[in-house]
Length: 86
Image (cartoon, rainbow, N blue to C red; front, side):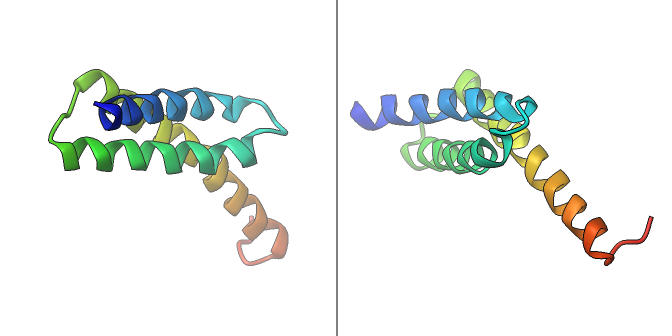
């Protein structure tokens, strides 16, 4: 029972941290955490065979939103370093 609430908490935390990608100084810290927690929640749901549509959607949304600052940060670094010319 504890593992069930654990993955639900990870899914919720992933979504909340993923939504913080709009905050400029927090996005590079909360993005990886959202991806980590969302991925862990999805893996635990599949492992326990307790896939709830609500919590799976929260985990996927948190993971996707957490990827946004990582992708844009990587793109920015590649442009600044001259690897990608605009």
